[in-house]
Image (cartoon, rainbow, N blue to C red; front, top):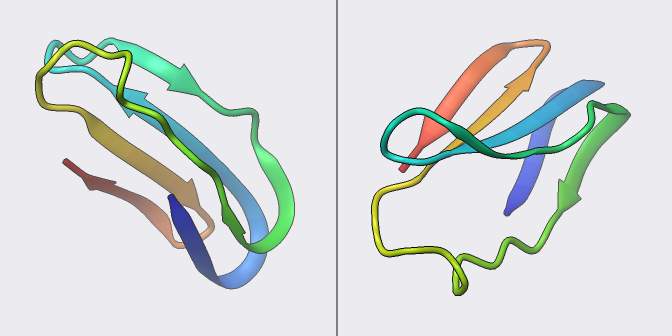
Length: 63
């Protein structure tokens, strides 16, 4: 996961499974413009996962 923000601020990363259960929740990261975080889906069951990033400009999701 590579994140580049428009402005410095708090960022939260969550990963959901197909049923909407949160599988991964990162603590809110303060005062960052960007970060790189490795995410390993190898041990997870096959399926569709949603990644959600929330920052000062709102929430964005990707499958």
